[in-house]
Length: 317
Image (cartoon, rainbow, N blue to C red; front, side):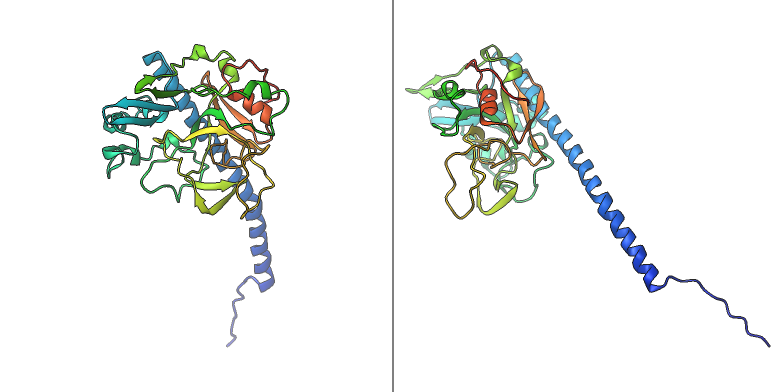
């Protein structure tokens, strides 16, 4: 009786290793493409968020005859109370319920505003860039990745001779679009900004820009886990951009330098900062959204910042 053997085909070890290597190569080729697609989608969603905020500010302007103040101070019998522009535009981004809970007779971080279940604890999706890290934010404060562009810092040695005359003098109500409603001698002292106040042109002037990732501290694309910022919540009137510039040659543990030439994607402390490759989204005063290049000069960014100084925009953005 003859015995028949059935020969079964199988991978040899070498063939298996070759297949694994091919799969690894394909994954290596596909992964960057997938990541680029995801970033493109996140950047588009981010652009839509800041666009919605710009439209909300315009709708607020139409309804109230003035723009919301970036930093609003209100005199009350219990002292001066402080608020952010973001609280005022809540009804215009479908956050009416949060707005109804929010009390303007208290400061943003007082009483029921900050209590458990209070409005400033609410995380609002429109205020957050999808590209920014989600974890590690303030546990009791909803964050804001889009800030009002309001001021420049001090007397910066990195200003050029051209831009210096236009920004050397500050403005007690801010040189940017969204102003500062103050209290002077116990009385309301309002900026009363309107779109007509933007005499440099609404298409040539920033109103909002990304300052993403707060309250975590990021410098030149890397997180500094040793410190956090306090000005990241959407209700915080200090969550605004006050352009100083940053020295990209700085290295810890040296103290942070007061100023520098780098103005986009350098540090997320009151500067324009995003987690997008090559730049950050900004919303102009006309409501349009542009992508500001990370290579933008100090002159260009300061020219976009001021609303009524008359300088000429130089450079592509």
